[in-house]
Amino acid sequence: MFISLLLTLVAADTDSTFTINGFTGVSGEIITNSMTGSSIFFWQFDAYNGNITTDTRPLVIWNQGGPGCGSEIGLLLEGIAPITVDQYGNAQNNPSSWNTRVHILSIDFPYDSGFSVALQPEDLQNTTQSSVVYLYNFLIRLGQKYPTWFKRDVYWFGEDYSGHFIPAIASLILQNNAVAGNIVIPLKGIALGNPWVDGSYQTQYYDMAAYNLGIINAQQRSTIWNNQNNILNYINQQNYTLAFNSWQFTLGQFESMTGNVNVYNTRTTSNMTFSNLVYFLNTPSIKTKVLNVPSSAIWAACNSDVFYDFENDFMLNFPTTMIPQLLGQLKVMIYHGIDDLYCNTLGLNQWIKNLNWPYASNFFQSRRGFWNVQGSIAGYAQTYSNLTYIQVLNAGQAVGFKQPYAFRDMAFRFIFNQGWN
Image (cartoon, rainbow, N blue to C red; front, side, top):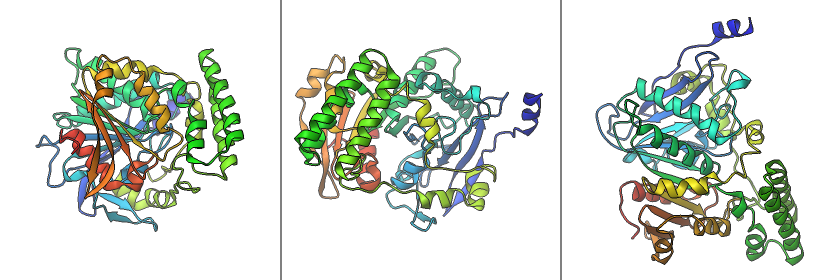
């Protein structure tokens, strides 16, 4: 009886066109389970002077990490969309927008992130591998409703836990592209920003990274080092819950030791705030006329329930196996704001060095060069074959938050094969 009642309350897809500040696109929720009404929210912006129904400009897909954070964070605060949100919660034109050359598609994933919602508990998944199944189903529904959207090169960008999500969905897309009769999603490249990919590497360098920054002393470093050993032991024992809990304890201990230095950007002791986004995205007229979501929908920056639901998924290392396979078919860019301790440079470097890729030695023998944007050094670039590794100066985990023009420049160089100076 409960299911029957629920079905009477479930609405159809809400997607429709919108215009804001003169910019156009399509947004809304698409039902991904017709039995329960669970849905995925998307927000698509047309390229400047472009038409996604008639042109062939590339499509960039963006999703946030967390897991459990709304993709509107990066879309609106990292300079991707043609609009941004000021401190008062008002939409303003964004001069660093990517839509100058590409179409943009932002997706709230997984369920219960941003405006995406699971209306039944059985729809909720707590592993990457199971979650990307309904993400792929969403993409197919999108391709059925908007067949021209995938008639172009597609690139998928994301940060943080997208280091798990993006390799998994990319692998699933390529597998299904090979099946006759399926909708083909012409994925040409993926870009992983400050990605969480493999805890067995990334949890093992907090002591060294923090000590070299001068924000912990030798005694504190020893404490963190012991914690790291415990984490690795738990991972090797496949006790992923204890590994996750020990890792979270270590990050909390680090913050206590340093006076709450921000682990996502060690140049500050303050976290990013999203009150402006909360106000803007929950404004009734924005919800109904721009986002095309029900007026009852409520947007929050991050959902801690989703984050902790994935606790047994965090330390799984499948991206380490997937990335070399993907490099045989796609361009892959790893980019990294060097002020991020959470996904720090040392751990990420070690992970890249241990990829079982036939051209790994060639990559590490290749030239690491300066990368300049607007006459200044933005960072360092190293590339060989399909792998590119970018280190971004004066940026933490959210690269575009501090360096929006460098972020756009980096994206366009990767997409359009423009080289790195």
